[in-house]
Image (cartoon, rainbow, N blue to C red; front, side, top):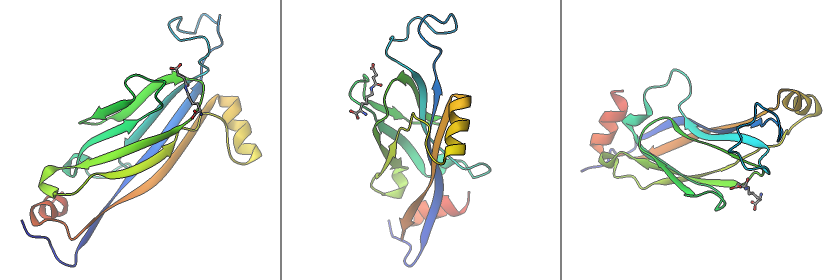
Length: 159
Ligand code: SLL
């Protein structure tokens, strides 16, 4: 149970959200079980960048704490896709917790993501989002392990 002195290992992840306009109330394409005040379908997710090794080597669980309007508001995922899809009308801050494989001895790390439902950015970008009825907001995050435990270091470096 020794740490590897002087070593740091980092991994990239993408934290993002996507939102689509729902067909208006009365439109036959709208699922009638969706509450009337809901205007968007959205997803929030943690993903590995394309072509990266399997995150499960180091990631054990992802939890999302969403707005208390939703029940349950704490959602946990042990395996990919680490992703929630819901419908609603308003954006909010989402607390994300990353739990690492137990061999790592690492404490969970927190991240935050604002669930952006409305078009944003420069005029041209906004117009495109409006036209398509689709908004995406993604961030590349770095997860750093400083002086990782030996067994964890080996697992990471032999991916
Ligand atoms: C806030 N931005 O942070 C505001 C409101 C709440 C969003 C966000 C309702 C979902 C449902 C919904 O979209 N809530 O009907 O369960 O306080």
